[in-house]
Amino acid sequence: MSDDKPFRLLPRVEDTNEFFWTGGKDGELRFLRCQTCGYYIHPPSPICPKDLSKDLAPEAVSGRATVHTFTVNHQPWIPGYDPPYVIAIVTIEEQDDVRLMTNIVGCSPDDVHVGMPVEVTFDEHEDVWLPLFKPRGVDR
Amino acid sequence: MSERAAVISGIGQSDVGRRLYRNPVELTLDASLAAIEDAGLTRDDIDGIATYPGNMEFPPGFSGAGVTEVQDALRLNLNWYNGGIENPGQLGSVITAWAAIGAGYANHVLCFRTVWEGSAQGDKGRASVTMGGRSGGGFRAGGFMQWSLPFGAPSAANWIAMCAQRHFHEYGTTREQLAQIALNARKNAALNPKAIYRDPMSMDDYMNVRLITTPFCLYDCDVPADGSTAFIVSRADAAADLRKPPVQVEAIGSAIHGRPSWDQWEDLTTMALRDAAAMMWQRTDLTPADVDLAELYDGFSFITLAWIEALGFCKKGEGGPFIEGGQRIARDGEIPVNTHGGQLSAGRLHGYGFLHEACTQLWGEGGERQVPGNPEVGIAAAGGGPLGGCLLLTRR
Ligand SMILES: [Zn+2]
Image 1 (spheres, rainbow over the protein chains, first blue to last red):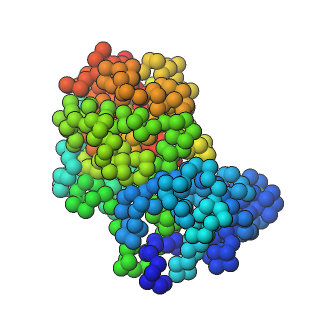
Image 2 (cartoon, rainbow over the protein chains, first blue to last red):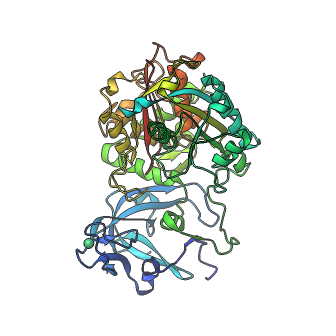
Image 3 (spheres, protein in one colour):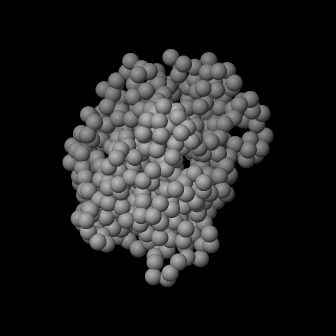
């Protein structure tokens, strides 16, 4: 980890979530998908909640999403996370009941709004690629 | 209705303070013995314990005592006990006492909840996460926290703020409206000698204090505190000759039908408490119009607004206009809310304070803050996010 990167608390990478947290290495946002009915399952589970199939596999999605809601955080909860920053819940384009908590980057906090179209961008930290989201078509 | 099998026969509370620096087990015993005495019982009568969240070392101050400390300190002979965190909200632990008594496992269940988050926090401020940091050495988040911590969202303040923001977006709710939850709590706290913050608060104070996580400012977030609250839940036919006419429970709400999640719940403007409230009304002939007071969880101000809507005091989405100006929820209003000052001003006793206040009011023991008109029906409700449980109480 290079010193110019801000400190981030990281997830514990395990067999059940590795596809998600390392997808960014290949530029892919991945979710577990039922191979029987096509339903995306998040957070990961051993069984499809729709048809109880256990035939599940990680698949890449488009990375496009919409801001469902957000908050501009002003409280310095964790050393290294410098407020203000935007925490959001986004829904992925492929299935509107798959949501991710994330950060909106690449724009001013004042420009973030509910319904805003965004796309994924990854931050690499150690063995984890954190999926963040930015306005579509802009560079960070 | 099976709720009639049990009643609340006594309540107790320890000293309450921002930072007491006292042994939390001692606070728990103070509250427990006060409740036993209030009911007119002795410790030999207690044959059950229910508590939330059970013994926990972390986060610091979140749990002051578990079943075992209290049982051993008082040398209780228990036929049934339960301590745990996977409940329908903090009051879900009290609700389990109805199940135990209804099933015949116990006659008098001691329920308690103890916090010492004020002392645990010390002078360091509301730092919700102290592990990790650059020198934290290898901490990694699992469970739900893996989806929130990496993004700097460690606190329920962040998660509930996003529920509030969604409500603002869908219904046009404003900060000026939400402020009334905090202003009302402070007004009531002024009349509660045990409340932590009792100085007057104005709309200007609210609008000018620092933001925590939009749309929440400091005054939308409850106050970490030290204190213990206890209840005695008794088998109805074992309570007939006790010290006070017991508080009856007309109906309980413990349901959760949607996904049990802070972020995947399908309608963040309602949260899970929607299902608990709906279940409660399905189990009674009473209606919101019969209710004389409502003690509604305010870990964050928006949660109270969500309970107001879920319980049917106004329509879904109309909570903002309903509380605007604050008159309707005032102590002398249509539906007095958080008459002790809530957790926002009286301190974060974490759910149990609301049931304590509802019983206090129904017994006419509110002193200066007593709701006028001899209230007979009250609600105690606790929990936000994926947690929710509520009780409809009557004095008859
Ligand atoms: Zn399926």
